[in-house]
Image (cartoon, rainbow, N blue to C red; front, side):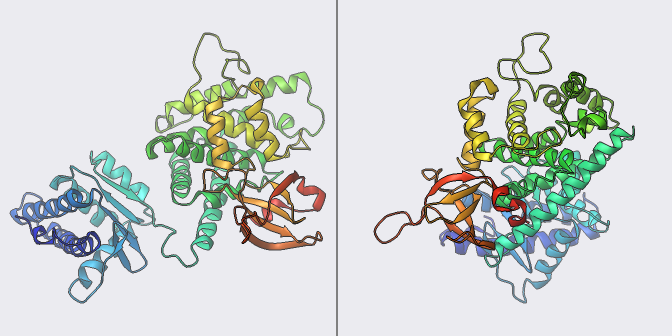
Length: 482
């Protein structure tokens, strides 16, 4: 009989609170003996057996086990553990080790054995002494030691309810700016014939994936910035964000999302081999210019193949770089040499790439289309060649009126679409930010309203009449998302 057996008849929350406290104390005890004795010592074996048994008991009862560090608290399965003098040393020690390794969550899966705990706790102790460690480093070390039953996540931006959206926005801005900077370094390095830092790129993608899984609205909002001068770099980051968010909606796993993010970030890497005189040309493109642009998919394959350290890149990155301008019927470019089926990653990136490109101002495209018009074209015009199922998923993600669309309401107010409505039957009624009053006076930062809100008579308080060009009203969309 385990030490947790007497707790089986209490309520779930009470059980988790008591069992969780015992688990943290057991972890602390295991850490202490691992510091003192070699792994084969009986004291270490007994402590690890007790720890495996404690975690197994919680998993059998609750079917999940996640430890989350937040401020000065530890949560087990969303239940906050009470800190008192009896467990102060255990809590503070475990929290400090998690912080030192950049870990926010520890997810324990069924089948976790004493050896798995030994590897994890030993790495926690040794890695905590290193500088600039993140949960990515710990995750890679666990994988190298063949430990797959313990998964790690970053410190969460959701630390409490108050100020959640503000923290999410700040985290999104850091993620976005870092992603653009790293992408710029990569493209410039390849253009100069230098080897880019693959590990830094992987961290950027992992951060984007974690941010999307945590709170996608803030990061999706930043894709509206669409910097004209930095288009080459922001476009790759935007496509990465859209692709990961879409892949999540289509049911991809976290590891698949990491691979998809890498593929999306590198989808246009072939443009690093296209002359800048072509990429930056503001006038009409010649036939030779278009031939250069049409060559960037296979130039991207060459760039990825020759990149030093490409073994850390997913093979799919080369496939996506080659296929992202193909259509589902294999028309488009480059021309298919033999029959093939476009990969699902390529289909996702093609939709994300097509949407961002058509809604952005570029040197040779000074009048971008509205996001709503682009989505409608993707959905209704089969000649665009996008996979209809993937397009449907993209519309579900962004809504009929995508984030950043300027709309006119029946109250004569102007509003920017802030997020798709989470209610599945309200796809045409997004959450919007009111940016002008009914007399046309521009408001900043405005305020959020849900277009499903109704009055006492059951009539919607606001309804979208049409979309508008923000330039007509001198509204810079990106200002409302930074």
